[in-house]
Length: 196
Ligand SMILES: Cc1cc2nc3c(=O)[nH]c(=O)nc-3n(C[C@H](O)[C@H](O)[C@H](O)COP(=O)(O)O)c2cc1C
Image (cartoon, rainbow, N blue to C red; front, side):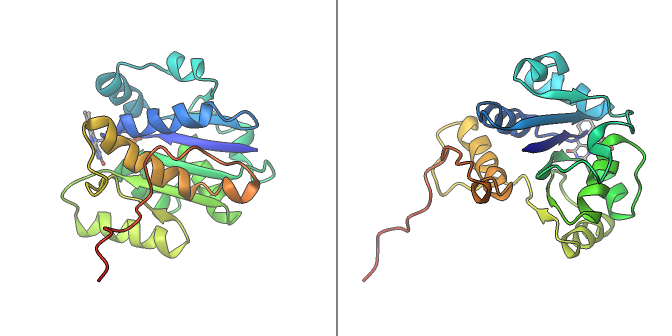
C-alpha cells in the first residue's frame, strides 16, 4: 500500500519528518516522498536534513520535475497523500487545477480519483485568497489540517507540539481501515474528569 508525503516550501518541516519517522517503521507501507525546490531548502534550514536523509528513512524520494513517475498516473493506485507542510503557493495551484510538478500533479490525481488527500497549510495571517483556496479544496473533500498544535495535552517541549500535529495527520491517512494500526504518539483526550 502506497502513501505519498509531499514537503513544500513552508515552515513546519519537523511535522513532516515526524510523520515520515512513524510511517517508515510500518512494514507493509510503500512510502513515497516528493519535495519542492523551496521545500528542500527549508527542510535543511529547519531540521538539518537532506533528501538523502529521507531516503535513509526508507522512503522513495521522487524528483518533483518527474511527471512520468508512477504516482503521477491515475492508473497507479496510492492510498493517501499528505502535503506537509503545504505552502500557500502549492495550495493555490492545486485549488485552481494546476499540475505543473509532481506534487501538484499527484494531488490532482488524488482529487480526480477521489482518494484521501490531507493538506497541512502553514501561513499566518492568511489572506482571503488563501482562505478561498483552502475552502475550494475542502469542498472537494480534502482534509484541511492546519499546522496549529493544541496545548491541551500539555506538551513539555517542541517535540510535544510537533507530535500533536503528526498524530492528527496519521489519523487522517486512514491506514486503520486498511488494517494498519499506527502507534498513538500522543495520548488521546479522555475528558477533564470533572463531571458532576
Ligand atoms: C524560510 C522560508 C519560509 C517560508 N515559509 C512559508 C510558509 O510558512 N508558508 C508559505 O506559504 N510560504 C512560505 N515561504 C514561501 C514559499 O517557500 C514560496 O511561496 C515558494 O514559492 C513555495 O514554493 P512551493 O509551493 O513550490 O514549495 C517560505 C519561504 C522561505 C524561504
